[in-house]
Length: 557
Image (tube, rainbow, N blue to C red):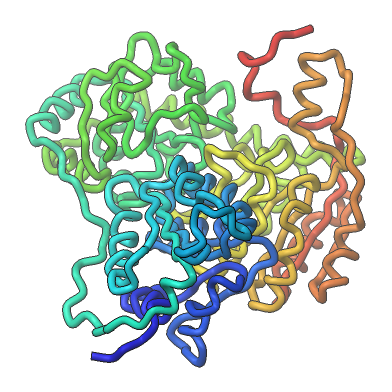
């Protein structure tokens, strides 16, 4: 049995769990841990330019691989810089292991340099926040954090490591039979499945709302089988637009952002809503009591019992992993195939309306460029299998209406936290997870510069993504509220920017600038061919933006 430091044991434990990347910024209290990576090829420390980006990259990596990822930061400011990214991972339900350094145990509670109560700070946004105070248990704690992150509803966990504990020697023996590290599943109650099948068979106009649980449990193909058997329309919760191939005739997009009026009207006609792997949370439903159609029944399937019936009256609630629940429904339905031709015809009509809506963007030829035209030009040239990430904000927000996804795990969105600046680091994390797939980020100008310095990280690490910056020299979401509810009394919306093509080139990346629609598609195509990080700046109209989403939160003055 070898004696190594507890810091080295952290790395040994991560390697046993097949963690390949630790993303973060070095700090003095982490040196013993970093030393455990010296000369190794089985684990890699990826240095970012801001700790927030580390957590965001880890989030995207986990969403695409469906495995825990690791971000790390020093104590004090390093830990506080992680907070927004960790909160984002919580909203996205990503199993991110957050490791922070901490002051020496002897200095704790004495206002030592960079001392904060980091356990309390992270506790509201993680599933578990723990400090390792015994060096001999460090491997066990890392393994427990790993399992905690993927059990039930996935989410971040936090492990705090005092620097003097990391210097202690421990006996370390590699695990001969490392316990199962796959995500544990929760099966549904058979009697509830039978009741659900009875309701489904009685339905004439069923709609499935599919959420992130379907993606986490890799149940997309099973979901299509269920929808085809029932003749049920598929919609998704906000930001989960890639649950299935968007070209499928029964798929009608998100029920949250990007829903065209015809799709919303069809949803209102439904007589049964089958919500699978979704919380039916605020970003999709706005928690409006009338969200579920008046004459519709609700079957709600979620792995977290607490969300079932929380916001909406539920006729049948089933606590289960999405994949196992869909398996059970398909098994119960057997060979039955209720085609529901009239309902399918309505789906076809709405799908045609969606495509007309998208095609109409090609008629928007004004200057500055309409952001909807910029989106559709991009959609036209994207390769199959492209992963799209986006920022919160207005211009990037058109992604929900105008982009299409041809397979699951192709879209990484801001989810519930909706922080601007997340899009570019998410794109870098996506490329780290899927180096063989094209990755494109869509950002507004206000959002991009929040974490734009990560272009240096992209160049150093060979993370060759394309970032489209829709530049209107404006904070568009706030401008939208001021236009619609405050008679155009614009305050604090205008911002200044560099030329983003020059900004890219100053780091050694490729930069392009487009201010005429005739150049959009050719420029995008050229950018996508490059084997280096790319920024494409598109000058867009500051007065074209989606309508404000929170109309209920503002009183017109």
